[in-house]
Length: 294
Image (cartoon, rainbow, N blue to C red):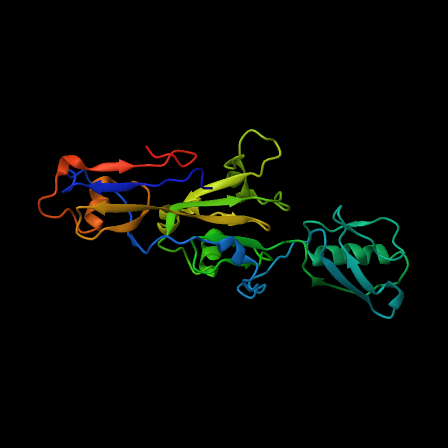
């Protein structure tokens, strides 16, 4: 998250600062700064920009999901079964609730068939998932082209979520934060590394855990930077702070402050120093917390 506000002005009395050593990444030209309200736009984004359940091969049930039960020639058993907060369902005339959480409808159908066999000879049971409510959508906003809510009915990786949001914009600072608003319901073996890498916001035990990833690592295809996104996750693509290069430069302009942006590179991106500029008169102005300049 943006920890503090940063204002940086480079005023050259007449010239460019001495060249610095080679840089890895830098800022790019940017339009005049505008107030971003991406988070507010999330609510207006259509949930149609989701995966529409495509690719769901093994849906594991959770609290809130609804199953449709049908027993051939036995209508007294027919009806909707809702998975309760404890992850269980109650079947008519079956004394003991059946555990449904983190199981598939096929596994549960077999257990219901065995339970009904006490009352019916060779019961023919049909069971299907009629409503998938246990997995809230993930939300992505910040420096992306289309803030969105992304359907989480199938296991989805960070790169897929960013693709749904139209990828990152030039305003991206280089960091992506994923806040985990709910515990992982049905963890799988490959989730162990991701769970171990979670951090807490401060020392508060009730703080929302989060993970941080580098955009460059995601683009490079590094597996560790492309984790599975959980239902209910909030993904924030951090926006870069604007800086302003003014004074005796060819084209005074605003830039985005990206990682490893140096003074010499910033000056170069606005066309360099004008002829006759005094290289020893460069000045950097920052704002302290509270708005005071230093």
